[in-house]
Image (cartoon, rainbow, N blue to C red; front, side, top):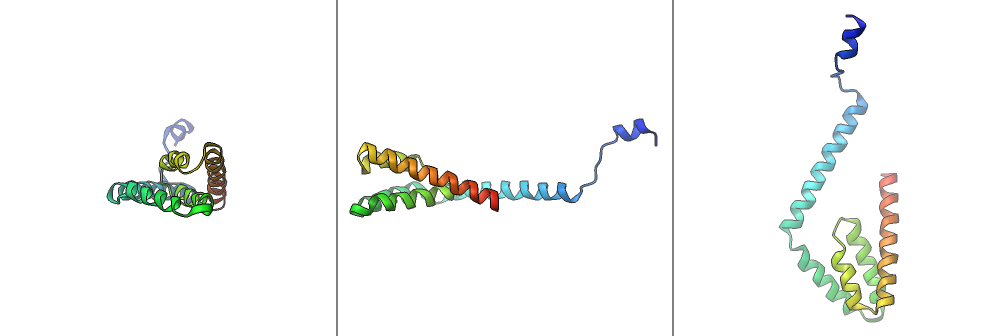
Length: 118
């Protein structure tokens, strides 16, 4: 085979690194489909509303409870829009902004560390 033919012919063999990438993409696609399916199958919005009502009933420690529920839900992929809005109803404006910013920052940091190490 001449050098011109070898330069044109594609490499159709899958090496170990290509297989690893293929399996990673396949696993990510399956996980995303499962999360979307669970979102539509389970009454997630009802669960979130119940969590907000439960946080409101905790009294003085409700900010800590809000923080941990926000971080836990954000790490598993639950949209945080309802929590951002409900923080304004649960707390005064400065406390709500502070609680959401600290919880979001913690979530982003933990997400980065999880992605980097696992």
